Amino acid sequence: MIPFSVLDLSPIPAGGTAKDALDNSLDLARHAEALGYHRYWLAEHHNMTGIASAATAIVIGHVAAGTRTIRVGAGGIMLPNHAPLVIAEQFGTLATLFPGRVDLGLGRAPGSDMETARALRRNLAGGDSFPQDVLELIAYFAEEHGLRVRAVPGIGTKVPIWILGSSLYGAQLAAHFGLPYAFASHFAPAALDEAVDVYRQTFRPSEHLDAPHFMLAANVFAAETDAEGIRLRTSMEQAFANLRTGHPGPLPAPVDDIFAVLDPLVKMGVDQALAISATGSPSSVERDLERLVRRYRPDEVILTGQIHDPAARRRSFAIAAEAMQAIGRRSALATAAE
Image 1 (cartoon, rainbow, N blue to C red):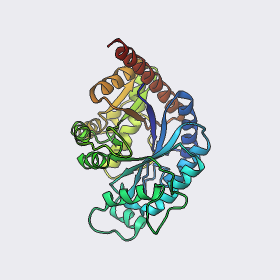
Image 2 (cartoon, rainbow, N blue to C red):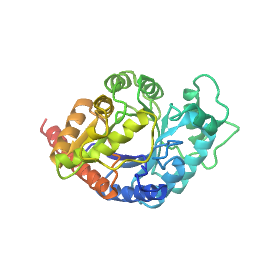
Image 3 (cartoon, helix red, strand yellow):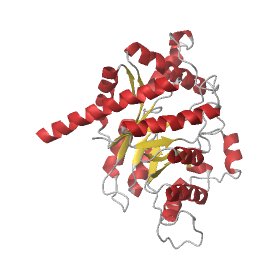
Image 4 (spheres, rainbow, N blue to C red):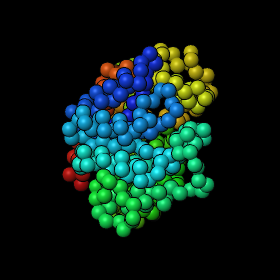
């Protein structure tokens, strides 16, 4: 069975509030736990009026406290925004409060404009210190690292670290350090094929992993019919178009005709960005997900879906769980027959 997980951006729906979004995230996490999802990750975004997970570690703690067994973590923390020691203390604290349940995915991109980046870290050093920052962070989680500065809590927690990325850089770094790798194919699939090949072919075994471990990210917009799944997807299509055109905001309500609100050329760009998606009825979603699993052979799949109505979002993830379980059963039977 391929483990399947949830990536939640804690979207603020149009007409709703940040409190609504955070309540919806906890509700969805409990739902995902009951459905057999393996991880529940939240992502760091700043200065975004449609996303409520800016204080990512706090939201992870909120979700962890309201669930019992599902792994929780960041997908991810944008490390250039922070001093590694601060992240080590935050996630060391989470791992101390919720032992054996916390993951830390790290991204290299600031994930915001330069003005916001300056507001976050104030002093932006030149050059790329991401590899050194990752190693520093790993050292803070070790049993004994020989550093004069220690993360407390943090020492000895050995929080699992993932490298996230949407380009070859992350694939190369994850392979070099022998870390698990998650590709942001849910919104930036252009380099997916090449990045997966680079990661697998250049992976160096480490104390963390003996073999490469790749997670595929995909969007899911599932409903009882193809037409309703397509309609649910229009919220994300509008949100992505708004972001690309410099007008981010709350997650729009779905529309019956996306071409009534999006120019065809804009829609084409959105479709390219959201190419790694499963949309429609249960059978359509299962077909789409199985096609992705067969093509990329991921060790794990993480599913996301910005859907305006919380009940529709819960139902979408329930359909997706059923699909992934069916795919896993068929895969297990095929393996046993070989």
